[in-house]
Amino acid sequence: MADGDAIETRNDPVTTSEHSGIDETLKSLDPDAARPVHVMESVHLNLGFSGRTVLADVNVSLKRGSITALIGPTGSGKSTFLRTLNRMNDRVPGFTRSGEVLFDDTSLWGQGVDLLTLRRRIGMLFQRPNPFPMSIKDNVVAGVKAHRIAKGKQLDVVCERRLTEVGLWDAVKDRLNDSPFRLSGGQQQLLCLARALAVGPEVLLLDEPTSALDPVTTESIEALLKTLAPALTLIVVTHNLGQAMRVSHHTMFFYQGQLMEHGETEDLFNRPQHPDTERYVTGRMG
Ligand code: ADP
Ligand code: MG
Image 1 (tube, rainbow, N blue to C red):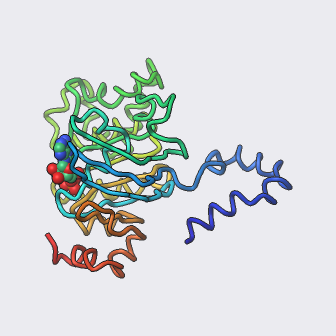
Image 2 (image 1 turned 135 degrees about the vertical axis):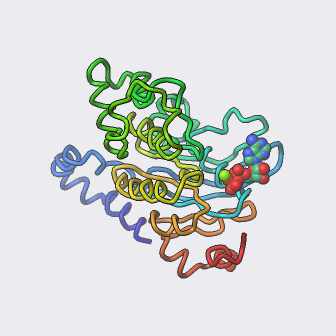
């Protein structure tokens, strides 16, 4: 597997012992050079509610800087898996987990993991836009203030930069102090995306982010998501197979309590290994 090759190269003992000076220089030029190729990894992960297994033995590695689509019929566990990746299920009554999720080779549930920091590094965008009941500007910088990433005048810079990044600046620049609730649904979702991006996450989890939006806004969000990688790793639940094909590099197909198949999107859609995957991606399964 190509991913495995990449890991081998980085761990090559000759490279590290003979050229450690060069390695150090390279590391300082590219801070990602020393980091694992896979940003997140699930290992024998079992998830369930109240004694009922939702997903069994999920083993998958998510490559840094890639876009992964999670597909499968309703109830197949896509949201449960996604929400587990930033510990959103921890406090859900009846939720059970065994196995591991590693983030930068460290357990999400490891000692010393600070949940606020984890959620800053692994952000989330939901299906329904959920602006906070505060001004448009305060929405964008809410996390930035909470994490003390910037203050004072810097907040204005962050606000403009992030709203520009999501293509919302021109539409809202004259009403930054207004409520976000008069914006269209699509604009509210872009605002939530700007808010999520403002804290500088490394991974962004998106649960059907466009399923409540019109086709034009959907298209602009898809275009935007593509520009966010490889600086960010994106994991997107979608029931829109066209969207998975257009946007993602890798696809995971969940079905009947299992991760049935995982691979490059192009392969999974055109050369599915499993008959159930084929039935799903060809529209013969609901
Ligand atoms: P998907 O996102 O693929 O539609 P979900 O992950 O939402 O699927 O749900 C997977 C299964 O877990 C479903 O059977 C659902 O009823 C169950 N489930 C999800 N959330 C909860 C919860 N909070 N409590 C109990 N069961 C849940
Ligand atoms: Mg879901």
